[in-house]
Length: 257
Image (tube, rainbow, N blue to C red; front, side):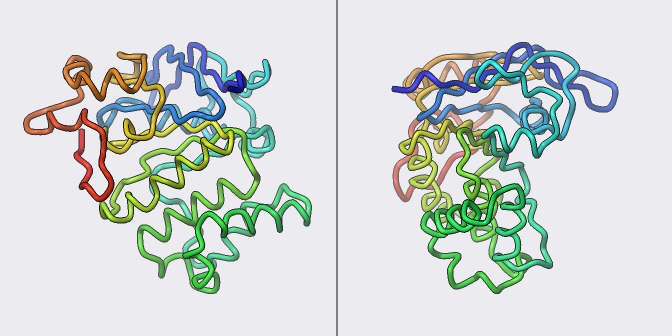
């Protein structure tokens, strides 16, 4: 297995005058899905924006091939091989699906752009018949397919996906899960930030739990699947959601944490 790695070392990110990500260190191996779990407000999305160059870290490093990407512009980070799928399905709503995909290829040569677009449509054939539709007219699931396709057109080495299942019906989530698995099988390193433990842990090799801006758990995903009390100890599970530590099964409704 490849030893290629995207690593965070002591990453600290501030928003609104306070540190919301505090000295976070984690590793995202190539060819694997790594899960990051945590409650709302844990700092996960701020960390993603810092990896993607949208927020500048206060301290720490984002290492790829021994090169520090922290603080670089988003287009340079993307060219280095790191694609970000931020929370909220951020598309250009008045543009068509085809135009949204074209925007994602602006740093590529003509042949690479065409190959990337073909690869994206191979992953999401449902989009073929929607290419001329405005993004705002798509369902939530179709919009999520477009943002994932945008990330894949540049053939990234690593993909950071923030809240894959947010606002989506379980049947749509179950459609997307095999695609995320296929990313890893093709050699891409995936960091999956996810509100549903069942979804994330069914895919992941390794897992981290983040709370209060810090990493509270680091280990194999199987540990969290087999011992949901570890999620309790990281302040993730509340009330009736104790079943969230078990793996998701095909067709099952995910359980939130």
